[in-house]
Image 1 (cartoon, rainbow, N blue to C red):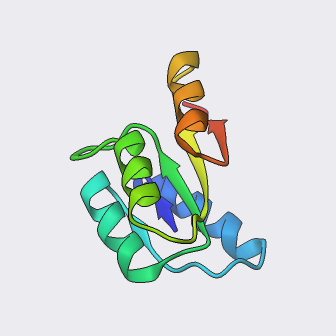
Image 2 (cartoon, rainbow, N blue to C red):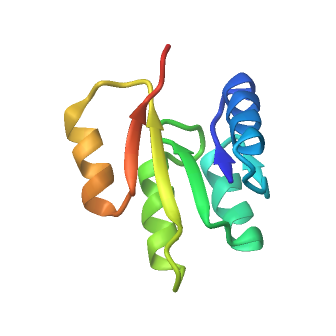
Length: 102
């Protein structure tokens, strides 16, 4: 699953998943949509943007952790170099965090 408010980023990430032979199950462009799609598809991997409209990625990560028995790998993506936010993502339960080129 890919969750990012940028159409271009979602398209590139989708291509990467497909090239890597991963099954693409859902995408979302905001935090509210992300959690709804997550509940419907129960993906093994979530590529989750930290900064999204309607609900930020940290909030969505907390919801995923609270509402699932089998935690997927959640890879946080951020254009920010804020070390506090990055550490918080890992502390909450993200598998990893990757910087996104602006």
